[in-house]
Image 1 (spheres, rainbow, N blue to C red):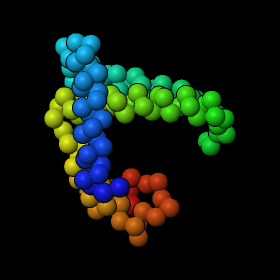
Image 2: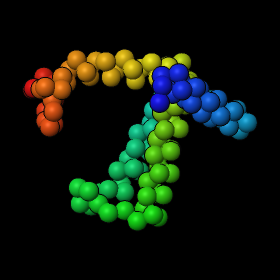
Image 3: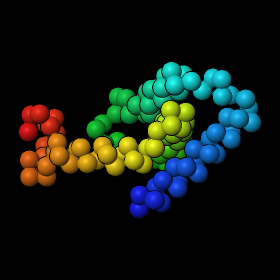
Amino acid sequence: MSDQALRDALAAAAAELAAFAAARDWQPFHTPKNLAMSLAIEAGEVMEHFQWTAAAPEMDEAARKAVALELADVFSYLLRLASVLEIDLAAALAEKMAINAQRYPVEKARGSAAKYDAL
């Protein structure tokens, strides 16, 4: 996906989430603190699906659907938080990928789970 296509998709989703919140008069509740907490809570709900499972569990269609819905919750809170804070997620992602490319050069990081300062 191109940078512009990603920006367009994120902008459309952010607008949809903002309209959804506005229709319900939820803006007063969508503070950065509340959204960050909700993001963490939903991420925990994703983890619940893998707690006590093998490293690479087999997932049936119902389990995959349940995880997909939890991931959608995580994504929606992340996107809403970025929107409220006026952060361009596509630009932030591009910047972070550039930083990570410097921290984790292919020749040092390939096949390693070590943190960049231990490579």
